[in-house]
Length: 126
Image (cartoon, rainbow, N blue to C red; front, side, top):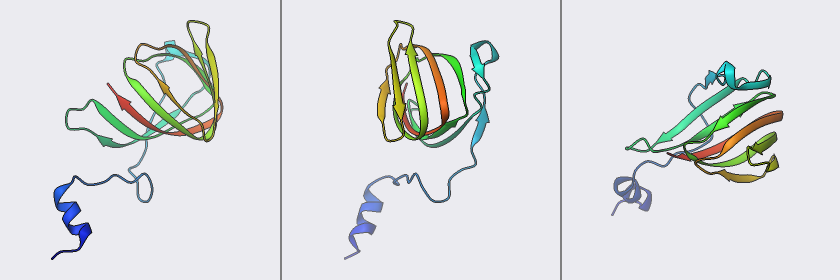
């Protein structure tokens, strides 16, 4: 009989690790008309996309700056480094530091302010 790991790998899709050799990051910035302050250069290492394209997950990072956001997707974030302040257009605000986890629901509008360079794991459902 084959080892248990062999049986599992034949029956289940490949697991995705968020460490080790990762893809080269894609680098980008928010659209110029959305930037409020600073130069929030960002990078993205998408590590998984579901077959229907509606679920993605990976690692995101950003430099200091503030920009307007409009979420069409729901996103789970686990902050690994830095400080982020999220301001809702409804007047709400929350500060997140390394170790914090939160969800930004679809329909959220406001601003993201990167106070200290940030890095996070993300899981997005569109």
